[in-house]
Image (spheres, one colour):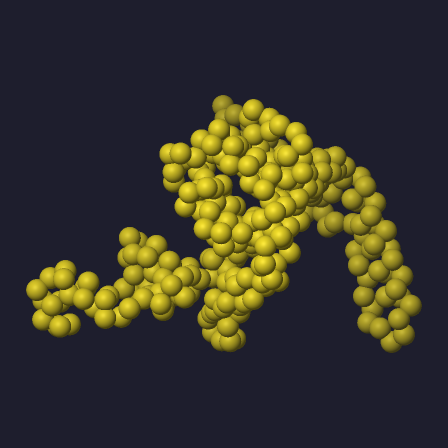
Length: 304
C-alpha cells in the first residue's frame, strides 16, 4: 500500500474515533440490542441451560470516607453504575486509542509525504511538476546524520534526475532478485526465527525495485549516492516491513539465552549478529581468530 494513502486512512480513522468518543448513547443502544438478541436465542435452544444475560450493570455500594474537621472534601465517586462505566471505561478507552494514534502517526505526516516521493508510482508527477520548496526536508534531517551531503537541494536534484531516467532504467533485464525474510522456526519453549533468502519476482514499480536498479548499475556510490541512502533508510523502516514484533522476539531470544553473560553494552552487538546471520556466516573464521589473538599476549598463546 502506498505510504501516503495509508497515512490518510489513519487520519480518517482518528477523525471517526473523535466523533464517537462521547457518543455513549449509541454504544449503549447497540449493546442492549445484542443482549436482547442473545437472550432470545438462548431461550429458543432446546435443552439449553437456564442462562440469561443481564441487561443492566450491577449497582455497587459506594464507600464514603469520613472527613475530619477542617479537611477539604474530595470529589465524590459516581454512584450510578452506568455513568461510572461511561466515564471510567468507555471514555478512557477511546481517549487512549485516539491519543496513541496521534502520538505514533500524526506527528510524522510530513516524513511520510517525503517517503511517498520515493515511490516510482509518483515519478510521473515529479517529472511533470516541480517539487515544493519544502519537499524532502524531514527526510533530509534524518539522512544528514549519516552523510553531511544529504541536503534538501542534493536530494531533490537526484530524485528529479532519477525519476526522469526511471522508464529507461526499469526496462533493463531484472527478472527477479534475492531478498531476506524472517520465518518462524520449529515450535518449542522459545519462539525462534530463521532468516532465509528468497527469490522474488521484480514488479519494477516499488521502492525495492528502485534500490535494486541502483545497485545493479553501480549507482549507489557516485551518481545517486544520496538517493540510494534515502532508499536504504526507507526499506529499513518498519512501515514498509512489519518486523517490529519479530525484532523484539529476536531480542527476547538473545536475552533469554545469554542472560547470565550478557551486559548492556554488548546487547547491540549480539542483536546485530543474530539478525545478520548470512553476513556472520560469510566471515573467515581464521581471520577472526587472528584478530582476537592480537588483542593480548594471553589470547595469542591460547589461540595460536
